[in-house]
Amino acid sequence: MFNKNVGLVVFDLAGTTVDYGCIAPVAAFVEGFRMMEVPITLTQARGPMGMEKRAHIRAIVAQQEVTVRWQQVHGRAVTEDDIDAMYEAFTPQLLEVLPHHCELIPGTLDAVAWLDRHGIPFATTTGYFKEAAEMVLDKAAVAGFSPHASIYATDVPAGRPAPWMIYRCMETLDVYPPQRIVNIGDTVVDVVSARNAGVWSIGVAASGNELGMSHDEVRRLEGPLLLQRLQQARQSLLSAGAHYVIDTVADLPDLIPKIEQRLAAGERP
Image (tube, rainbow, N blue to C red; front, side, top):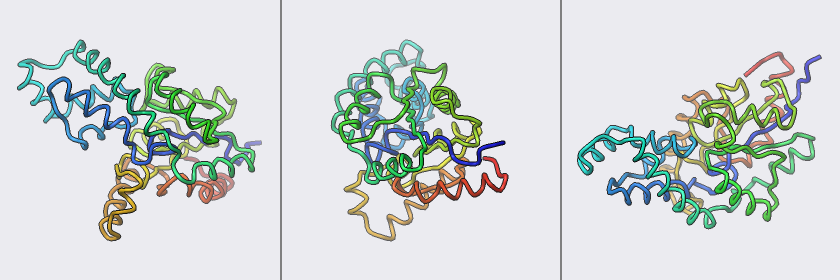
């Protein structure tokens, strides 16, 4: 008989459980492109957020304005050697800024404590490469956040939007079928990856890449403007296919029973 309870929650890292506003990777991408004499905007850097980082660089370069700027500066189209060079430049930049952006997002510990009390294991996935991900997770562990499994984009054949990291979490923790899995992330590719995996998708609006603001910036922003920007972030995630959108991970415990009610009624993601 099919178990109608949620059996696993898979969290993203930056913008979902750590690094409110997803600040670290953006800073690293902007600096890496500046070093190549092709400055990019924060919006251009954030567009492909959530992807494996080499794929992220390739997606930034593919944006029309960046393609034109690259051609103007270098007198030719970007090559795979250029992608490799930018990735090599990005790597130390990320490792330099990451230690300053590993703080847990408020509500994360309460959310995973709720999961523990209800016997639901949790895992993490990330677009970070192994060294960067382990740096984040080591600092998160000191703060009390220790997932039962952690899968990196470099552990699988392809990162998001492919479903492989989610499937590897399921395999590692021996939890299936996909309808018992909840994936929570703050980017469009988090949502698409979850839908590709056939699992429940929860988008995160306030703390994540779609809003793209630090916790202090969010608190300083005036009410109506903040609500407008939050609505835009929510709509972006819903349009990508999220089943639910919450402000931060602190809201997760309220959703799990709702998903279980839908499972009990025979619904599937």
